[in-house]
Image 1: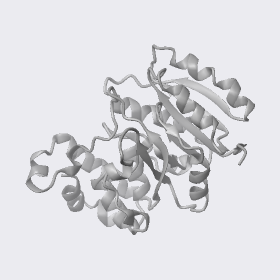
Image 2: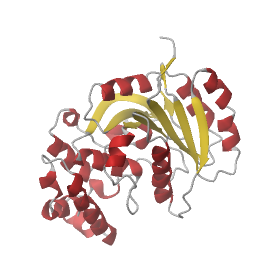
Image 3: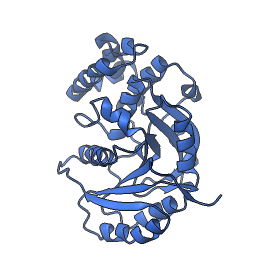
Image 4: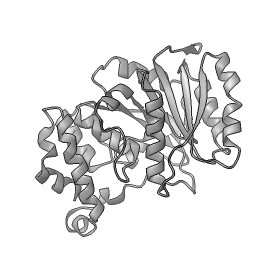
Length: 285
């Protein structure tokens, strides 16, 4: 199938930081999509290695294919990389708020040619979907993202309540492999991740609260885990159980409980029960 432009509704947000070793391969994989986005927005997080020049060198090639590429400097200055990453993606999503769908991308992953086409098809067929969490192949390992996070196949057909219950306890969405409806997230009033929540983890919870989180087990990219990667496949306390989980609880977990409880105000009636204090304390702590 010849590449074609989706206009005016599909965009991409990428975030970069000293990404010169990998950003060419990432942008090449976007340029080779069977269904092209109409906009690619790169939020650059204070790179010092020529990343921005490399990104801009793609502008003419993408423009010839009907794709507008632009770069914004990150407005985040926090020392915590997790907070910066979340704020960078939030900045990008706000900038593309008028689009119908936005694919999220990391600076070093290689997209499979049909990623955008497949995700657009799934989201278009499901108007209630707020976020689509797709799978990916972990580079150098004989496993996928969903295998690493122990995402059960039943999550594709589980009830909204069961999906939220699982998502509170476990990671499901990887930002670089996800697609979102920016309007739905913005209208929720809770787009910006609170505290040290990562954007993908927080947005998957917001979507699940609205009964709008969907999963697709078909891999859409090669996911790279570099030696200097700030975040990635870490699951924190998610693998802990029983007494060991309680012993590893931290004061910031109480802040997470409070943040999740506030989502009750926007929750679908079918899932509100999962956001009660008692259930959240058991799930998070």
